Image (tube, rainbow, N blue to C red; front, top):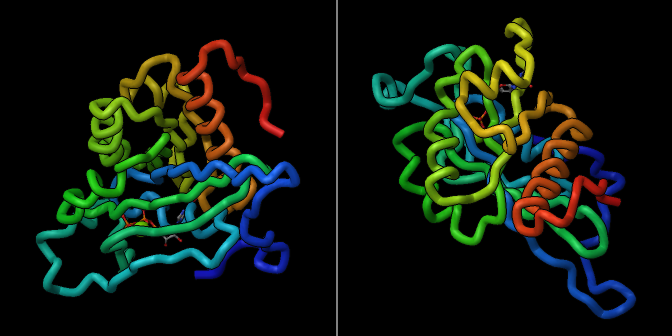
Length: 209
Ligand SMILES: Nc1nc2c(ncn2[C@@H]2O[C@H](COP(=O)(O)OP(=O)(O)OP(=O)(O)O)[C@@H](O)[C@H]2O)c(=O)[nH]1
Ligand SMILES: [Mg+2]
């Protein structure tokens, strides 16, 4: 998988002129099987993303749920990893979770120290994002729900998704296309703003630079 804009890859984040090391922020990209987590980390990462894709073999038949995405032939078995520099002060480190139920035991480890999460949803199979929503709600990790618009899927309004997923009015619901760098970046910026609002309600919806 190629990283986006590789010829404009910024140098690794270094100390700013004041000598301050950028804040490293850990973000999870989670959701059900085949909703586009690996695609999102790959589209937005400024470094070649690390991915751990393995071919699903006959041995996983009856174990892995292919409902709705039967054409998918590989799955993430450990994690995806990418990086995006927001500005001189903040660098996001992205960890994509495995989607298959047999790997969910890894989520606890991956969530260690995470500041926030993107829950990716596919409106054709909205129920697959429920475990991720429950996971972050229980751990009080702020999250946004990003609806990945698959071709041919009915275009739900964000408020319809909010009702179906049953999240509070404060949780941002964003329509996105995980294949598009700018759209994936907007999702991450919305998450950072959401985290900042939660941590300091006085910080209003001031746009990030
Ligand atoms: N049409 C469309 N296809 C997409 C989109 N995002 C991902 N895909 C495709 O959907 C498939 C699944 O994407 P992945 O990124 O592997 O999904 P995943 O959530 O990482 O899957 P697991 O790790 O197996 O749970 C791939 O073939 C992608 O090319 C999208 O926004 N629109
Ligand atoms: Mg994946």
